[in-house]
Image 1 (cartoon, one colour):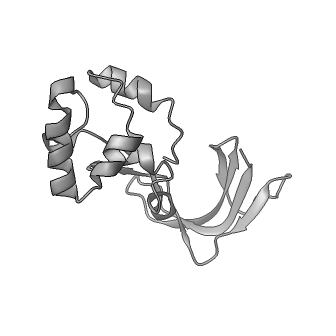
Image 2 (image 1 turned 60 degrees about the vertical axis):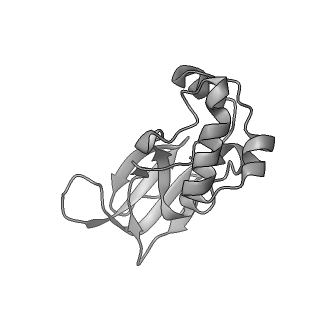
Length: 145
């Protein structure tokens, strides 16, 4: 993972505090320092002047638990700042799932979300029944969020 120094941005930290100008140092994917006029120490420097810098966005309502199998980049969500997602919304999810319910759930998701049936059939491994089993399977699938 690349170390990064984000300079000159306007920080919006999600706490409700007023936005402020500062630099942000990231090492091994973790914010390690926020301050004014930080000096680069071997990191890649990203000039964020004129831009906002904020923590990753948690999308609390998605139906992407199937799409993660055929589009692990989840493009364009990372570019929008999404770093985490909540699954299982609206009772329309591919987990938990008994084997005999699979076609019914796929039909429903294809209709409601306009998703391609072929992707469900060819890309989703369907190796789970319970939510924990689904999460175990998902951990083997590299994703961008």
